[in-house]
Image 1 (cartoon, one colour):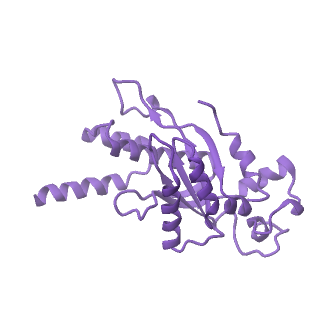
Image 2 (cartoon, one colour):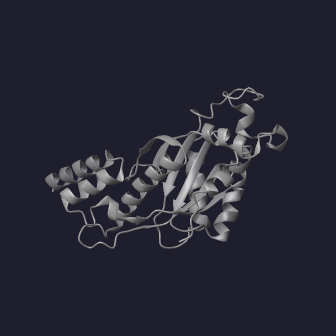
Image 3 (tube, one colour):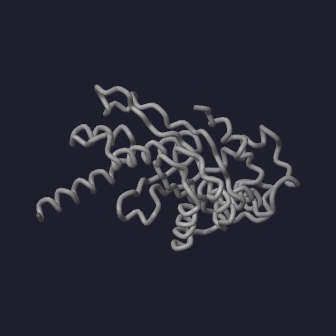
Length: 241
C-alpha cells in the first residue's frame, strides 16, 4: 500500500515538472497513459492553452500548477501588454481622450504620457489562467467560484487578469456574472483538441483543434485595457470552425 502511494506521488511529481504538450505526450507514451482519459484530456488541454497564450498573446513566465494543490489556478505568470500598446498606436492612435480613467495606460512606467508611473505594462501584470475542458458551456456558478478564488488570494484588482478558457463560449448567465465581477476576467473559447490518427495518439503534430473561436472581456478588464485595442487585436486570432 505504501509503495503504491509512493509511486503515485512520484508519478504526480514528474508530471508537474512537464511544462509543454510535446513533453507530456512523450511522458504518456513512456508510461502507457490512456489518451482517452479525462485526466489526460484536461492536462493536455492546459498545456496547449499555456503554449497558445505564450505564442499569440504575449504571456510570459507561465508555470502550469495543476493537480490537487493548484488552489483553483491552473497556470500563473505574467501578461506583457506593451506589444499591444505599440500595435494600438499603429492601428488607431493613442489619444488620451479615448482612454478610460482606470486604464493601465495612465499609469504605465514605459509611457511618457502616463499620469502616474506606478506599473510596468511589460513586467507587472499578473496573469492567472483557469482551464475547463468541458463539453458544455460554462455557467455562472463557475464564474462565481473563480471570482471567489481571486478574492481569497487577495490578488491586486488593477494589475491582475484571469483568463477562463474552455472549448465553448460562456452561457448568457455566466457573461452577466462575469460583468458583475470586480476582477479583470476574460473568457477565451479555444476548441477542444482531437486526434483521429488511431495509430499514434502520442504524436503532437497529429492533434488538431485548439483554435480561438471567441473572446469576451468583462467590464473591469475592458476599463483597464482601454487604449490598447485589445479586442481588435485578439479578433485577428479568432477563427470559425
